[in-house]
Image (cartoon, rainbow, N blue to C red):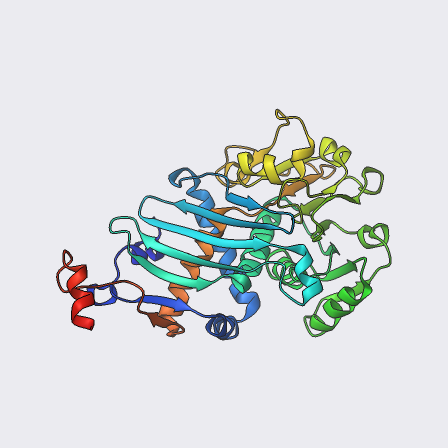
Length: 356
């Protein structure tokens, strides 16, 4: 167990009555305090550390409540000492109302007492951890010396993906495509001073030409074919992160048949990922196995590697663990009075009476 995880398990007794809360304002301050690329790189290391300790975690597919309009989910996990969960929604049609398609918050708690020790916004943090997870995987699976990435789907997650791949994998050229040219213009504007060479493209085919890493991140809640088999060449790494619920995919199934497919947690990905298109016995490799040397990752220059990323609770646990470490040092939190703390633990009613 890491030193930072040890610190979560034992807050000072005087802190037990209050829960540190990281607001959106303080999360933004943290990003600027650390620097966004430095924060992405540090998140990669936290996520990889927890993936290497994969077997110590409780694991289950997220608990999802689906509706006609979207999905609301809880994503819990524990390493035996610390428990964490994230509340998150996915509502693609929100954009028409000027709302975020994804919002989230999360909690860390001590397993020995059940007391929460951190509550944080996770709308911004989820974007950061998703990009960090992609870059962590690409660090081990992408072709050596990859410099060009295609970004298909230029929505809210796209800039984070680009910066994480730049700082972790060395990408310096970004070829962009979205069915909405305004989204591409937004991304070009936001990354104008990033140091990346930016190329706006008019088709997926143009975007992936010459790219060693291909990232797909689209929002429509439906089975779609963003990439077809005939346009994907040998030797690339595909980072497919748009599919995250039943009935939503981005890739033609023939691409999966040609690729070596890597996932976070197989039972969840079979429900939500690209591999929901494939038979139940379709072979995949979980990334923790690659990190721990139990399974090979990229083994040849001609190999197509595909990360079928749907987001998993351990990544959120890692992100909350990172934020807990960073905001305590920087003082970027508020104390919330959300734990009743009577003088006598057996006399909760007396606490109410005295308050009157």
